[in-house]
Image (cartoon, one colour):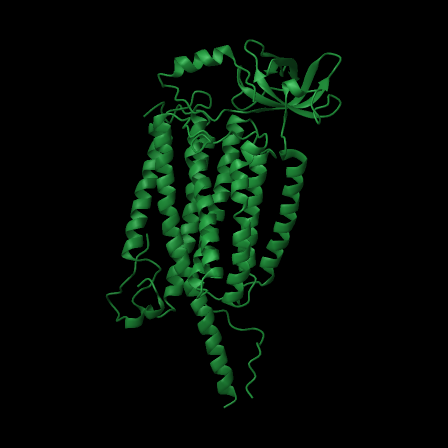
Length: 51
Length: 165
Length: 257
């Protein structure tokens, strides 16, 4: 690995950008999954075109 | 005849929008229209021709010395002097140059031989641009610090080319 | 990433065995996305070198650029799906759901582009934000698609929603070339393109370019995964709305019998 994470300049901004990106993606993904599970319990399997 | 007109107060169903506040999209659309107006205004005021080049100051329409300007040029080699929290340097572009006095220490990746945009006013008496904001305009070229081309790149930087575009 | 649960202790109604929007294909895709994201972190924060001028700040590029490109792609998919709905013979609502799902994902990616760009800008330019051509047109694009999503939520029938949002989806996509070429058309603080530039050259170190490639692959997989799931969720929402309406009408008819 080049440099080294400890010696990285402006590590707060750089790690912050990665952490923020993955946090937002995780939150959106969780919302989609939760919506899918909640609604799937009220829909007949025959109406789920992906099954 | 059966009355099929909607009744108020239906029970919210899973996935139904009936339980949600109906006015929310309208508020969002209103906000979007206001934000869009602000953005378009900013575009017309600021984004079109974001800066004047050094050689255009006092020469080109919109780059008059009696108004607030944003000036783009390359920081000349060996001209950066920092003292008492202020920074002095010379910017050049296309054969023209002038001194800049900046009330502060530039942030970002400011250094010699890098293009910058300085906000401020031109002081004709001292032929100095009095800057109150400096933005570094980095290039679209990405070169590894470990790359073998580094020496070549440094040689190019040392020549401190001031560009013509 | 999702799991269709099959309880072992209680009998399950045959018609309700699938309890999520996932399938074996999306689960495989989800695992591939997580693995590729891991590679992206390894290359972005570890293996890729620092830049001569920007030093380590260049690592934000591997989040900023892929999210921007995938946001563009998402909005183009919205426009194509909108056109398929509007001009298709069947006016299939499936296209409308893909359009809506893609726009939602695009807005999330565009928001990430703006935030990571601001952090990158602070490190390189010295400022978080400036009203230059690229930033201003990008902000306009972002706000336009928030408006698109708000219009989708206005209510009415599914066909009304599909028609009005399709028109907006087709109009808003015109902004993408404006954003992309803004740095060439006007003087901008934002740098010009390094990969998809006008002369076809790639002004980027090899390992940096590969790290960017990993980022684009990772976010593309994520986009496809999210698009499949979100489209299915919207389909279920629509179905429940329809079923709810049917039930209400049946109930009302029964009151008069």
